[in-house]
Length: 127
Length: 292
Image 1 (tube, rainbow over the protein chains, first blue to last red):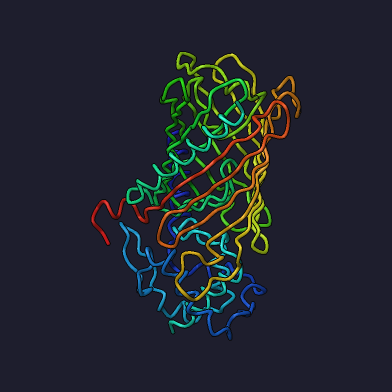
Image 2 (cartoon, rainbow over the protein chains, first blue to last red; image 1 turned 90 degrees about the horizontal axis):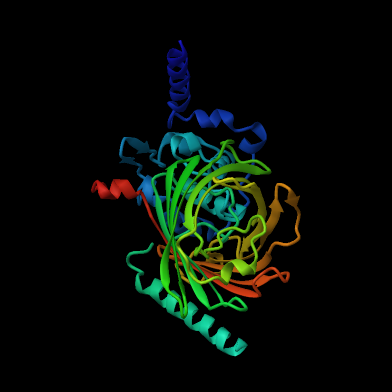
């Protein structure tokens, strides 16, 4: 009885962790965060600076050209995807800030806000 | 005598720093802003960080020393980071000794970013009395602990718990650590604290590739010390240190941290100098398997 209880708990935890990369994170972004505007959207240097930050910290998982790639058994998403294209700057900023720790996307909150917005500008420039 | 001691500390510092730079290809970039304080920053999943953390000092009444902890930090997943430390030290006129190891795990219970982000920390230490790595100050640790001749006969098996609270706000990181340590023998709980704050010199990245851009540098400070034991809790009869920290992250290269450390009371060592060289290997096991 005790063992079956443990197995049931493990199964539940496994199920909770299984929702990887399905875009469900978009539903977690509050309306206020979703509507945030990129303060650097018109900064001529922002995309280039974001590309530099991307190459340093993101390319190892998402690929040099943001094309996505397999890492072991995990697929790291293609950032040219429709989901990223249709995401608002606020949603992308939310993702960079919070990550998706269960699914392997770290939180980049250690980057100052302007640097995260530079990354958002770069991601939007891919489309 | 003081002049000799200062020169000895400088010599050891420079030698150790050069030794670290000499092993550049084998060492790879850190994200820890501090030496003693932990923030809520976890290692990225699959990445392995290798770091050499050293501290050098010349305790009054003792011999100058340099103690080094070789650190391997691995991101098991987004909310769990595991670390192994291998400690050793060298004391002038005495010996160079291996002083033990530490295994630690950090777990982030809340998966989203909050105003204050807690992290739970568990560590097991198997060290001998010669250890001088000073990766934390607890109980009634004082400068007297740095004076006895190197001896590996006294073993310490300790469990350490930390509550790490950390916040990022407008480019600043502010971290607070509360430490509880228990020698697994018949000893009481010891307590300590560590506080840290740091900020990059620029909040925006520059569009051009550069090693010396301001965003690659961060300035901060740490304050840490003991809080006594279970039956003698308090700030007295223990050491306290204040330490400015300068960090330089070389793009696609190693990270370098230096920290002149000042003792704040007569139980503290007057001056210590800390330095760290670290490098992060992206997706370590994928690389081992030959995946790009």
